Image (cartoon, rainbow, N blue to C red; front, side):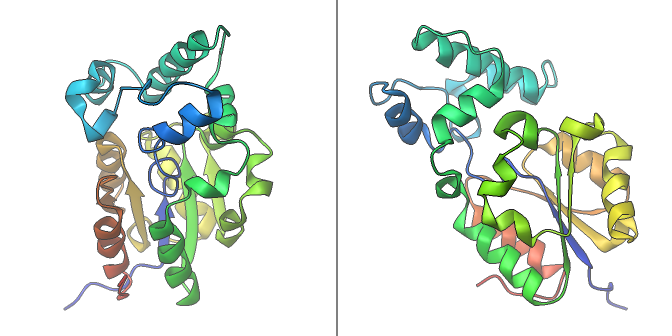
Length: 221
């Protein structure tokens, strides 16, 4: 007997819906007036270039700690003291945040929504990194039935309560939800809660969204 179709697509934001800051170094350098190729850390695209990323993947530091360190580094390049990630993101992407949304994400969100399934975001730091006014400036966010952000709940993935808050908000069961995240620790946490999971590959977004949509009996291409 085949498994019933999923009922909700639950997405992380940074890396899954938006491009990573690693992918947009050229945009960041232009926005900040830095010379091309100033930013050399490439995270998952070239782990050997980024020992701090490797440390984060090992669980030695948190994702928030990683980005706070990078924010401070970039701020110092400009002779400024950046004490939070929001400053970095606003300065690098503030003019038009829609330019960093993955076209694959917009396509997948449209396909799932048009088919009558639910959509949700589960983020550890959406408003923390992007600012409270960000949601009003990004049209794609209006497509979601629920946005659960640990900036406000204070419950970070992979805490089981973070995942439960999503399916409770949607009035669904854990197994009805497909959770997509680019951090393995968050995927492990979701799977332990009986959610269906897709580990998002930032190097191949289309393949990851194709995998997610199969849970709904939908085609990405």
